[in-house]
Length: 463
Ligand code: SAH
Ligand code: SF4
Ligand code: F3S
Image (cartoon, rainbow, N blue to C red; front, side, top):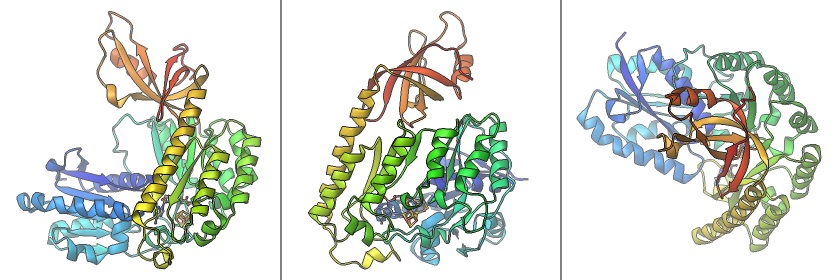
């Protein structure tokens, strides 16, 4: 088999990261090896995101830059996959003449056959057919990075139709994967050295319901029982479906991390209604309180949209007030953006760009205050962190035999710490390997806006 190089540029959410891994695995069966260098590539795939206008612009500006590469190397194959591909289909071929393949979110399984067709006939192919069910692959393990954490998609699509959101149109109807396939995939990942799994779905709380499979908390129990796995995370949880069973799972399952991402989007009932979120501010706050009663230390994060159509000053103030009540550990906030097919695009009372910007800034400033407050409050406490490896900023050995490592607390906070290597002996490689993927106790010595600093309590590994 001829060996060729594949470069994948992944834009968008964790689901795209997972899909890109599947794509790399599938194309490896045709002889394509992943490369980190665009210039070395025989094929470039852009896995795209359509969630906001900016994400879509990013795709087309990247594709624009590909023109020169294609001129210099006409045999280069350029493929566009993911949510923008699903949304725009054939238009991409018209708009970007040097693109060879457009494949949608349900076409990944058909990609090897498409690529073979393009290779042999040098034709251009569009496949955006949406198929029911989820394709399951047996993939060779091609990721030789020493990862300790991986995403596993447990369901595709979404049936919620929030009025601002493009996902139901580009990912299709909600479909859950069979629990056996999920567990087998996780067991294989653990065998290859993975310590932490993040289960992915647009609304994991409704996992299995439509197809009469086990519930999400039951699936979590099965994942918790996988030997060798140290930590479980999941995202995203829709507040309307957050059940008591799931709240108790945080308390009862030892591997389930102490963090929930519970996007509220707005603190105003008027806006939540227009967003079709199907919960009220009161119900949301009640669920947060129940959660904190069951798990007092749980970290809660959220998503917020600034300047949804019709958001008055008073609506916006209720968002700020809700933030003050909940005191989130962290928060992602976005300016509202019209999306094709999403009904809010045609809502009246649009908010001006400058007002959206000002509101976004206010949300971010307020959140920074709470994140910092929470991080500072951790100073002096001890936390167990799963060590990810050397911190990015510091991959060199420091002068006096010190290395900076990074890891995460169960509550999903980044902790950087210095580890002293044994002086005089060449154990650096072993030390890095020994620490990476281990859970260790760290005393928190400082707290910043985006991370914590700590020092190991003792390097007696806990596992
Ligand atoms: N399924 C998840 C969200 C997936 S999209 C959930 O229901 O929470 C991730 C985030 O993007 C959303 O939570 C929302 O805050 C944001 N988002 C989605 N569509 C948007 C739009 N049109 N404009 C601005 N932000 C948007
Ligand atoms: Fe989009 Fe709403 Fe579905 Fe989340 S729940 S993916 S915001 S439609
Ligand atoms: Fe973007 Fe598609 Fe994910 S629109 S956020 S890549 S599901």
